[in-house]
Image (tube, rainbow, N blue to C red; front, side, top):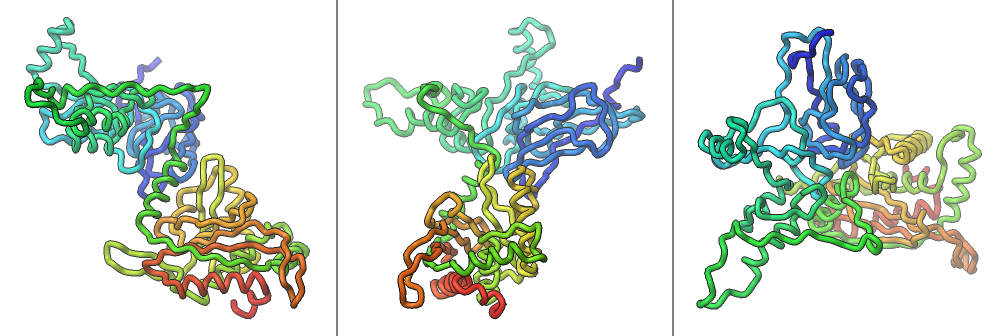
Length: 469
């Protein structure tokens, strides 16, 4: 039996499966050490901040090691699986993906963590935040005097035990630096030894928030000697805590950013959609529409596309860096979809150019893919305008928050049978309320009102889809 050499092992790194993504959670491994894999075979499923994605291995071989268990969040560029590749003798192994976090001087550089790190709360660039199992690779060097002292203490001669760096995400590290808090002095309260923002604030409180001590009091302890924050506890019978990660984490960050960046304005209109519902039933019987998803949302989407065509300035974005309004000559129509992993907003590319049957087909594929949890990151990028159908939950209307980078979002309320004045008489009619939120930096009240009024007019008289298209 041939002994496996280091040169025959290749490391497969976590790829960037979507523009700008920095980490992904390993949801499921499909292989185990000792399994044979072939080029293109899916070895695991990961969840990014945008979607669940299956990762294929790019070469043939035998699985040597899985570096992380299921449920671990791993930085993009970090090796996640080692594969022994036949005939690779003499080839140099790939360098490990992880790098120590930059420090002002080598003497202050801290060693890498030696365990594994779970999903963290917070979104942004993660440089070396994942705890990893020890494996072959460049060691973090300790200056010679420190090595000697540590070896003496351990009684192991030249074998040095390096204390791992406290576990915290880069934003938490920056917060600690700004507040003058030593992370090594904090007892973490997060899962698996993660230091949270609350831990840092708690450690900083004795120095920054307490009243000044009397002149006769003993000198305050140095910053590094601050009392550690107590470990948080709660009654599991009365509370359930759910880690914020993946899609939910990204959605929360995006919504907060949107709400505090773009000045939102929301307008409402209540409209009789009885004729639209009749048209939906007629389309279901049309031979050209057989096998397609035909529902009110289809005609609402078409009505919004026609309204955008009549008022193209609504389909724009705000370029803060260049102080420009960017008017899009295409419509990537976003459809908000509730999934087990949270709310996602995939979009139909070039929806403005699609016929009604093509739009129905695209909507059907979008909904099916979202429910299966297979929406790709690319499908959620580049949206220009969005529709959110809160009516499916029995809600009359709402004030939707803009998708980041978009100028408008249309909320559709529940369609209900209500008394309505029709042709001079009060009759039961199918009525709904529409709400249009828009970015007031680039969309004024007149433009927003025209778009909303056009959508309402089309849904009240759907024949306008023909005369206005």
